[in-house]
Image (cartoon, rainbow, N blue to C red):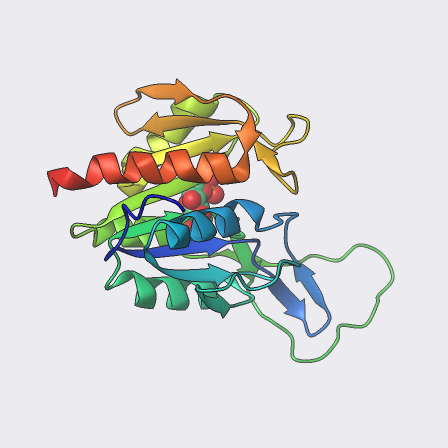
Length: 220
Ligand code: C5P
């Protein structure tokens, strides 16, 4: 059995991609598998936390003993996460939220036309930043995926979004991030300090993430 060091804590985790529908049969999305977020939810559950997992469309089954909310779009993710975060002690945003959605979503399937087409997109709300503006005593954890200047950019995000820390992962490293069972991350704090963690399973990354969140918390 695992140490019940999260008993009595409420944890909200977002996972997976979002889908931004252009019309009833087409959407913009990304290859997020949901594995990282599901691992965080399962680890928190096993340590005794009360866990809500808000997930975009992924092929993973609902973990037992976790409240699972399935959503499609960033706007739906925002409603579900902001609602659940109200009573939460720790919020972990692993979801790969689409930055944009269709400016106008067609209710009818768009017919093919000759030549190029233009799709108008409008920015989605930044959920982590919204939670950061109304932080309360909650610990806020984000993820970021960068191909370059990762630590600097992740520290900037932690600062701008008022997150306690961000786990930076890398889209191009073999066996990690999108779809993999392993991950290799760098813990980045808003003050720019960082720690490279060795490549390990997503479950082990989840364990260390929650250890760090508990370290941040007693100051509250
Ligand atoms: O996309 P970006 O690199 O800014 O994502 C950093 C963090 O912010 C992630 O934890 C992600 O889940 C969160 N995010 C969000 N709402 C968005 C975009 C990102 O909560 N619209």
